[in-house]
Length: 187
Image (tube, rainbow, N blue to C red):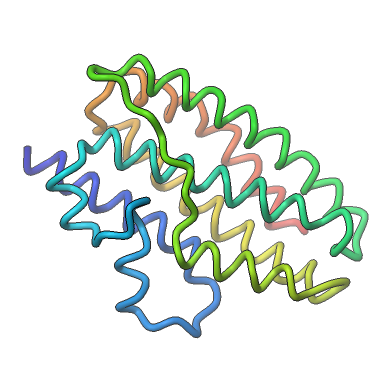
């Protein structure tokens, strides 16, 4: 049980690193942003299973990727950023469908909550205020951080998660997220 609680807490911390690319938020605010219901990570691990916490984090990650990438067609200045963003919308829409299917196989079934954290919402709002080169730079930085955090969470859950279907989902997604991370680093 301690391993599951530690895993869930580490997944929450890993997901927060993606949201912390804008260093203006106090660290205390970041600790309350991980779970979808906006309680702190310790409370979430006591009331939710590690599978639910992971599913919520993965769903929020997908939602952030989709929503931030939908901004690129009108905000981005670079054709490369626009092309990457188009790929991200498709890939993360597909990922959400796979996550939902895997979570439904859990016992009891898990329903991922695709709710952006406060930090993700702040970052999304910041991206909305930018255009051209400023958007491209902020978007690229956000994509690198988000994909690295997601990769870390996937690796952690695939190695020690509590739900077999979600562990398989996490393991199967690692190569795609690694590829996306490398692409984002090249933006």
